[in-house]
Length: 389
Image 1 (cartoon, one colour):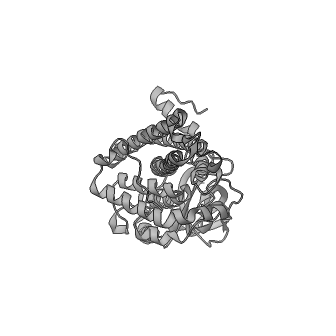
Image 2 (cartoon, one colour):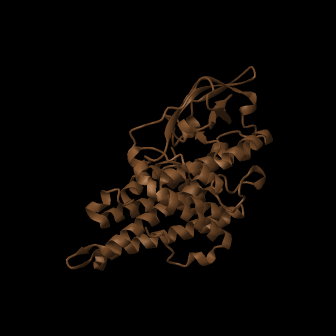
Image 3 (cartoon, one colour):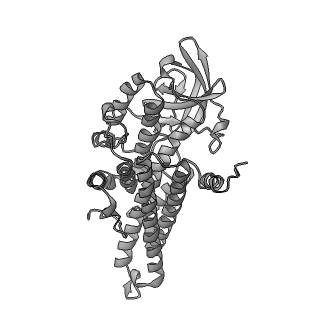
């Protein structure tokens, strides 16, 4: 199988450092060798390829922007973006695993945790020895997380949790859940370890999307956790939203990988598929689709590169992250659908990655803030008028 060459119509590689290029080529090789050969089988069977976790940990894919003192790679945000991009080129489920582990588990422990929590959890999570999940969304509260009904109550020696979370990536296989609950009316973060009495994490089945990913419910029934398991520096809804910002940043990069995989598949197919005595790439309508795809990929690449540079300078605004997530997911899904059209009937076969990416991107468009919510976030920023209610 030919190795993936990437899509770079605007010579964006010339703007990258040697380290950034090295990280990308390392992850690209990992995906070509370890993900592409097995992913269709796992997607078909609805199973996450857990065998990949130790190798991903060894290569530094988890929490890569966090300090070396905690066993992390301490790389910049552009390099982190390329990890997300290449993993999602393999499958959104693989990127989701790494994204949750990094942005939604390691980041809140690093940002809101005690030194003891950081020293215990971060090195283990970085190596993939421990797996984490993030519990914010509830069965009745997705876009409005402030309405959460999961409660924490102070009891002797710790806290008692009651409530439920929904659509939780990694939940069933996680060793620790970062759970958000209201304590005396204020949102706080808690570390709930696997096996804690009163804590269940059943896996959700019947998905047509993200099939190679573990999606779960988290259920807490008088679940008592020790005092030391509260994230001491968390407080208010701003804390979990800061985590979502990190995840949205990774998604904005990740979906470029899906888009490139679909475009590359469609381009190669169009050049080799003969109809009416010539390749379908010779027809104007096919060329128009391919041109639209490469244009949108290029714009998405420029959007996240500048966002990454701003993030490294600590100047990225959450509204800018919303714009990148909203734009890039929308066009990645559009590119997947156009690629399916170019492949015709073959586009529905898992001999090609296109339909799998299209199905996955339907979920990615919804999670970490729907397209509509990001529209309203940017709308409020540019008009000064909130239109959420």
